[in-house]
Image 1 (cartoon, helix red, strand yellow):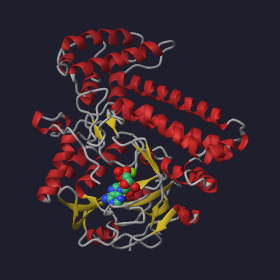
Image 2 (cartoon, protein in one colour):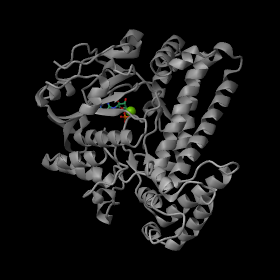
Image 3 (cartoon, helix red, strand yellow):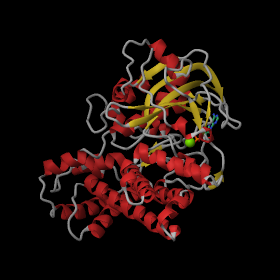
Image 4 (cartoon, helix red, strand yellow):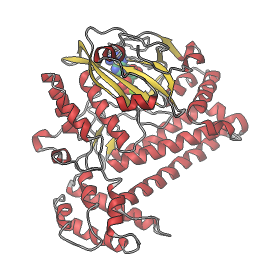
Amino acid sequence: MLQIPFENRYVNLGDRFYELIKPAPVASPSLIRFNDELAQVLGISATDLSEIDLAAVFSGNVIPDGAEPLAMAYAGHQFAHFSPQLGDGRALLLGELRAANGTSFDVHLKGSGRTAFSRNGDGRAALGPVLREYLVSEAMVNLNVPTTRALAAVTTGEQVVREQLLPGGVITRVAESFVRVGTFQYFSSRRDVDAVRQLADYMIERSYPDAAQAETPYVAFFQGVLERQARLIAKWMQLGFIHGVMNTDNMSIAGETIDYGPCAFMDAYAHDQVFSSIDQQGRYAYNNQPGIGIWNLSRLAEAILPLLADNEDDPIELAKSLLQGYADEYERAWLDGMRTKFGITAVANKDADDQALIKDLLNVMAANRADFTLTFYHLSKLDAQASETDRDCRLLFDRPDEFDDWVVQWRERLSLETHSDEQRQASMRAVNPVYIPRNHQIEAAIRAAEDHGDFSVFHELHEVLQNPFTEQAGKERYQLPPEPEEVVQYTFCGT
Ligand code: AMP
Ligand code: MG
C-alpha cells in the first residue's frame, strides 16, 4: 500500500468549506509518469509499488490510507464577472501532508469525476490538458517560479466528450495550498465573516506563520499575499509567460502559479500577446498581468475587509495603502529580475535609466518580432566589447540595425559594472533559459500521445525541461521557435 503522511486540516474547518466526496472510478487506468523526485520531497514512499498500483491510486480508483477526499468550495470573478459558486468541479483534495522539511502540501486529483460543484461539466479532464499542465508546471519548477507541481499523470482508458471525443486523463497536482482568492470571496459574498476569519487563520497557519506573531496578523497576512503575488507575476513577465486565465478563482493565496489552462510562453515578443481562445478582449494579455494582479488582490481586500477592520477605523484606506505596496513590490521585483537578465546590477540613481534601457530593448524586440527567449539567450553570450558573437543576437531582429543602436547603449551601461565578461555571462545564463516549454513542442507531445498513444515525445520534452538553463548536446531543436506551419495561434482551457 502507498504510504502518504497525511495530516488533514482543511476537513476540520467544517462542511461549509467543501463536499466530502470520493473520486469516481475510471475504466482502465494506465500510468504515464510518476514524479519520484517530488514523491521523495513529500515523504511519499512508493518504491515497492508497481505501475499498476500507482495508476490505481493516481486515477482515484484506490484511495490511499489516511486520505479524506473532498471538493473545495470557492467563488470567483471570471473575466470580471462574479460567479458566487464555482468550486472543484472536476478536482478533489485527496489530502494534506506534511513533508520531511515541515512544509505542508495539498495533494489534488484533477479529472477525478463529478462533484457538487460540477454544474454542467462531466468532472473529467482530457489527456491533452493533463500533459500540458504536467510539462509546464514541472518546467516552472526548474525555471525557479513558484508553482503547483505534478506528482503523477495517468490515462483513464475512457473517452471524454469535448468538441470531439478525446482520451481522458487524470493529473495529480501538489500545491502549498489550493486556497484561492475566490475561496475568500465565496464566504464573503455569503456574508459569512466567521468563515472568512477561519479561512484566514488556516492560511496563516499553513503559509504565513510569521503573520501570527505580528501586531495586526490579518494585515501582515494580506501583505504577505501581496508580496508573493507581486514577485510571482514579475517572474512570469521575465520569462514571457502568459497565464491566460487569471480569474480570481485561479489566483493562489500561497502565491503559486495555479490552474494551468490555456497558458503559454511567447516565442516572438509582443507586449499584448494573447493565446487563450476565450480571451477575446485581451484581458489577460502579457502586459496586463501585473495590473490584473492588483485587480484580483483588490477583490481579496474586499473579501477580508471585516478582518482588516479589527484594529483600524478606516479599513478601506488601509487596504488602498497596502495595495500600493503591491505596486511598489512588483516594480522592485521586476527591475531586480530584469537587471539580472540584462547583466547589470543596481547602481545608485540609475533606476529610471535602467528601466528605460530595458523597455527600449523590449520595444525593439516587439517592433522586430524577435524571439523572447532566444534574445536573452544570445544577449547572455555578448562581450562588453562588440565582437563576432553579436551576429547571432542581431540576426533575431528583422532590422538588425535597430538592435545595433540599442546594444551601444547597453555597452555604455556595462562600463559602470565591475564584473568581468565571464562573471556577467554566468549570472545572465543562470536566469535566461536555453529551453522553455514552447507551444509547438507541447502540441507535438500532445498530438503524438492523443493520435498514436506515443508518450516518447512527452517524456523527451519533459527531460530537456528538467535543466532549462543548461545546453544539452543533441537537443538544439528544443531551442527553436516554430516553423510557420508549426505556429500555435490559440490555446484552449480544454474544459
Ligand atoms: P477552470 O477553467 O479550470 O479554472 O475551471 C473553472 C470552473 O469550472 C471550476 O469551478 C471548475 O471546477 C469547473 N470545471 C471546469 N471544467 C470542468 C469539467 N469538465 N467538469 C466539471 N467542472 C468543470
Ligand atoms: Mg480554475
